[in-house]
Image 1 (tube, one colour):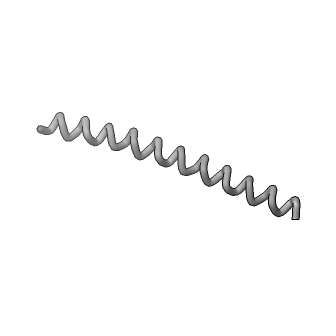
Image 2: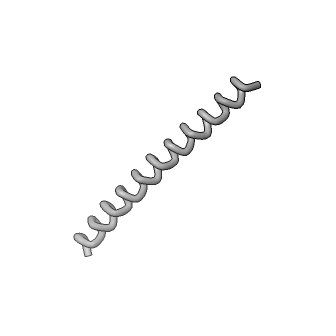
Length: 41
């Protein structure tokens, strides 16, 4: 049970890490696309 709980916590941590990285990438790519749109306008 202890080992199971540990793997569960590890999975949550890795999911949070992946979410943060994905969020960061979305925000940066969004900024880049906004800059491109402003250049076109």
